Image (tube, rainbow, N blue to C red):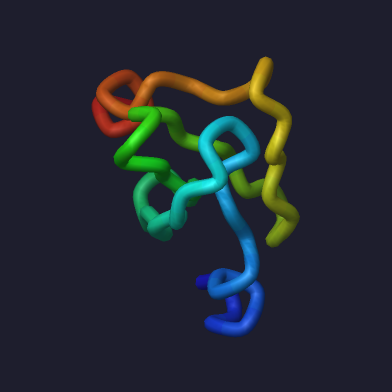
Length: 60
């Protein structure tokens, strides 16, 4: 679980929208772009080219 302070300042790198935390798999989701950004060892990967479609990451 990410700290609420960090989650409050992180934004989607593509649309600058709010991100929502997912727990399984651990990721940050942007409902506007329908992308998820992985979180590895507590470090969010905010690179657009590494993002996955929201539906694909939810199925895993």
